[in-house]
Image (cartoon, protein in one colour):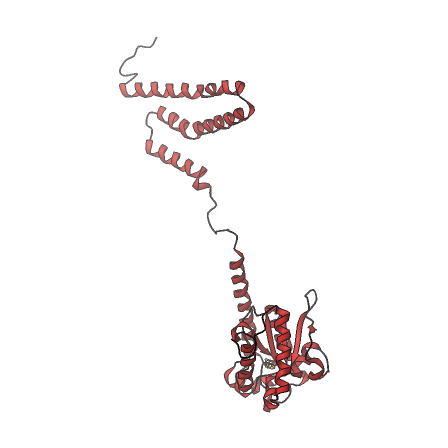
Amino acid sequence: MFERTPEYFPGKSDKRVRNCGLRLVSFALRPVRFLPSFFTENHRTVCNNTYRFSRRLFYCVTSEMPLQLAAMEKDVDINKVIRQHAEMEDFFTGGFAVKGKNSVPQQPEQQDNAAAAEAAGELEKIADEVHRCRKCDLGSLRTNAVPGEGNANARILFVGEAPGADEDAQGRPFVGRAGKLLDKVIAAMGLKRSDVFIANILKCRPPENRDPRADEIISCFPSLQRQIEIINPQIIVALGAPAARTLLNTNKSIGQLRGQFHEYYAGLGRAPIKLMPTYHTAYLLRNYSEENRKRVWEDMKKVLAELGLPVPEPGKK
Ligand code: SF4
């Protein structure tokens, strides 16, 4: 039989081996401590105990066993074991979380902001193309192209026929006298210019403000069609005969068209957009009668009613 000599069982190792043995026996007997409850308590308790037992067994295997086995080795590196243990804990807790891009679903408001930013970016691209465009002769006659401006999420889109001298000089739509009157119409509707989008059928000024030619409209109209597609307004207000005729593909006069809603064909698979023709503000300036002003205001009241917006009373803010 063995003789316990200091060489074979040096004092420190002797104690360690004994402790490890006790730990292993304790570990082996753990399941036994739970057996009575398996057979004596009701089903729910049994399930709970099964769960607890599984957890403890799992804990023993993942946390205590490596320590116990490692402690049995003579030249054990305890720091290494602790590090491995910590890494394993990390794996089953924080370390198991997916690292990288946050995939938290966006809130509706964030989505709206993201959609508006994307629409504004698309409109910017169209504006860049218009500034470089030379598809028709007007491209070489202009001072500045006038792509249009306003709210990328506008509910109302105002469309005129073409830039005038002031617009050509500044590169912005409706900034001359007719533009100032349009600003007043928008303000009378209880809105701001920044609430709407303003554009023209042609993006470059025709010489001497003549009417747009058919070939110029054919070249330029696709830019406006893309703007309408991106903004997707609820109502288009066509200012004057050239805008109304082009958008509705008709030869009727503005007198026949104004005062009632029509439908702008927005393309295959897309819902038509309601369109209200009315007099151009330049026409109003030339024919500034009470009757004409009332007609335009009646048209704008119908637009507000269609959008469910309150109709401001004259003289009240
Ligand atoms: S009017 Fe339109 S199509 Fe003609 S050059 Fe200007 S942007 Fe291009």
